[in-house]
Image (tube, rainbow, N blue to C red):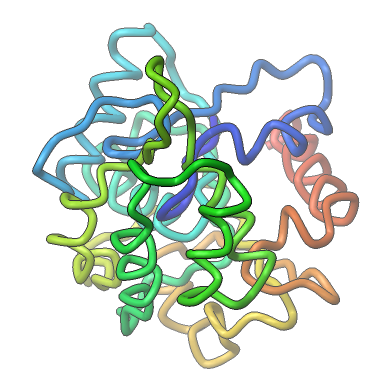
Length: 244
């Protein structure tokens, strides 16, 4: 089961999901206010943790392995604190339990300024976004949120007002009293600053059994930048669970 990051969706993980062992069933969830999931003014970790618990209960899934990237990793870490017996193993991608200074305001401003109702093509939308987000890889990632409605107009799949109003919570630190000693894999990009060497003692305070793998020549979007190396690390970890 995969939990995406901020501004993402389950669709972002389709390519990675195909590289899992074919014996696994992979669920790509859209979290609230993202993708095709429901929209709600509430947007915080307790709400997303409860959404996950409700979904698992509805599906009747027991002891899944859950992977969370960035914000999704924080959702997973908080979930482990509240429902420690529900998870077989945890995989956290390029995020640590510490607090982060939020740097997404420019993205929010850019998405808010798109004037999608007047746009006549995706290229035009992307050109408008480029004034705020010059990095092409980030811009293309964000453009996956743009779609055409039934009347031919462009719209955003994400609930931008809810995300903008609660953006600061994305960087919240994990509560100090959360400790989970189940099998845990942290994957970080060698070129990313999200999981630093100085984060490791605190990381292992919360997750004493944690393994940490570093993917060379990868930044924050490890799975997209080095998909083969990422899949190899994942499948090795998943294979080890059968003998624990």
